[in-house]
Length: 308
Image 1 (cartoon, rainbow, N blue to C red):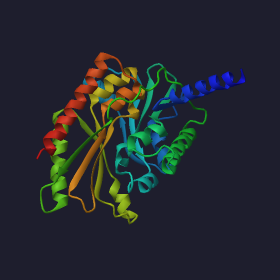
Image 2 (cartoon, rainbow, N blue to C red; image 1 turned 120 degrees about the vertical axis):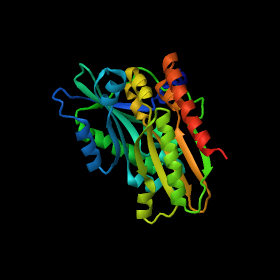
Image 3 (tube, rainbow, N blue to C red; image 1 turned 60 degrees about the horizontal axis):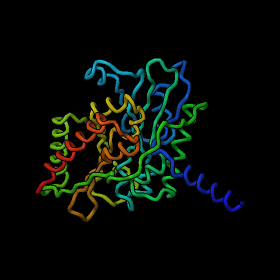
């Protein structure tokens, strides 16, 4: 009988460990409206994070769709230099979550403010880093400590769903060899074409981070360059956020573009919409259609730019 009880308890514990969410949402009362996106940005910066992007989405939402269900909705992206220094040599896909994005939001009529971000396990899985890596554990602790500074009485809430099982490759990758004798000129030319293609298909380059700047500054000569674009499609985040405001933990997506020292190829990659579908457990046909359409357009941009 004792063995049966232990066995059943083990099943419950395992079930609880498996029933997890890739996204965490920290919520606090904000009746006095003293917690603002600017306050959040300043606190993260004072806590050692680099601010990559902090965009108020209400303006583009209203401009394009005439209305929004939110009183506050910002897409916020940060990274830490110590995380990059600890991971970039052995885990070149660190740029998939550097910047790591968050959504800051308050629905109209609510008296709370929420910040959604990826869990440490989700960050590790996307980057291809062990979940127990010291840099991941430190990043997660710094994130949660900073949130507690901003919202001392805040707490994490349970989401009304669990992240779905992993079925698709969540990273889209491409490679290209830049043409030209001067790598800087060749890169600039490629990136100008990339940015023009984004605009033509309705994407926005919401931010740009030069991760190699800090690597060079610390005498880490691993890359010729390492750039990260924060890419957003307004119609995607607008439609998905109406039912999943926490979607900002995945968008704007971070797309890396790097070349290692001694290599000819430039590597490009981004966390694709299948991660959105998995993390948010999206089943609604309209939402799926919007996401898949954006994925196809982004893939088409990279295919055209990297074809031989």
